[in-house]
Image 1 (cartoon, rainbow, N blue to C red):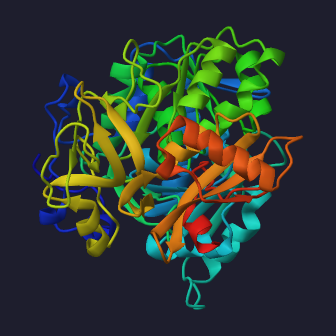
Image 2: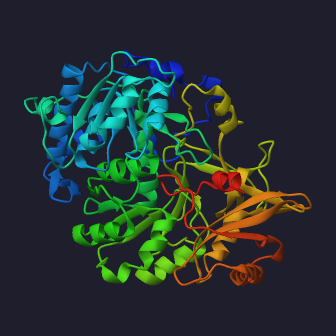
Image 3: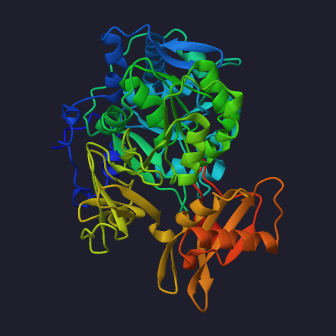
Length: 550
């Protein structure tokens, strides 16, 4: 696809893209919906097109205490866009930091920034000053919109750079989410008298709409650039061909709008299909179940640990509206799949996506769900398993997952990491997989997490999956630790269920259980009982921290 002239007067994002020769091969002929025009604004397509189609009075967002129609959402977005341009001096291409829990106003801010030609940098509420400062430095941000309840750390990060020097010309504007006092200078006060209409910025399809930062499973977060067309591409592949939503659906889930998984599941996808989204500020298992019950949600997105926790609580709630459940963020153990299916009768759709690719590119689908498998390439994408030279390996051989499609990795001002992620024109996700003779992909481990013990390749998640089937095990993480005799040995960190006693007897019981279910050389030679496991805000296990603590 040829590069269109940018609408962005601030060309930081265009200037920070990796060299074109380091981009992955892009595919736009996988499905007919990917034939986008050279100029488009993703919000005009996601939101304004719904109004033009006559859906203005349909529900767009539901939340504790209220409901917004598509027209309500559009008018709010338009008023915020006027504030951004007229009061806050937004120039097309400026990055805008957003911070808050999942609320209607945060969603409206996201859409308003992109509609006005800005670049969204949405951040988790639980990030601290150091992390916010790093993001503001890396993306050169001078404007932030933040929920007033968590404004202090955002203000501090916007005042001072990581090197201690002042950040010049910054502005932080507060909003109150779904309630509270909107005082002078707040976003609500600024937008009060603004017009309810706003013409979307005439952006190119390959102008940046958002920068996402990785969740830090391997250390320092990396910024990834995504275009307006990418927002539509992920909406026209996985949900269209796997989820198959209708306008009657109500999406819900636990991931934050700050993450690729959450912004796709809870904003892009429902809007693309005229459905509704349920936004909850808190998403603990019981809260999410209550939300499904009270708002008759039909499609749920969360992570494996949440499904496992919710499975023990479902009998307390009416989940009869639920028809689709999606898991991503980390591999879905077969034991969790079966536990959820027994509790609800619903088979979880498992998939893999990445911040670099924006959303899911391999997934299971109706009629082709094998517990433990991640499924097949989503329509629009191609996937294969390759060796270290980029050559495809035979079925049944473990290698590196390589993906191509309409989205791809573009690291922010980081050509060195770009060359690691993109090789031979393919996106290498950092996951070790094997592909069976029928084309199903089976996750083995992160490539950095493969355990090599006495010449044997051992996938930690496989051992975790077995341990999770034991009635005494609540959660676990498995890594390789250095061993003088074997190179590495398998070590398991285990959280026990209430009533189970840690000790030598339980260690031996768990070890024998693993030996009984998989090859004996894979059993954990060391087991440490812990109270918590290190996880990212998206629920991913941080195995590097387990290794550091061993």
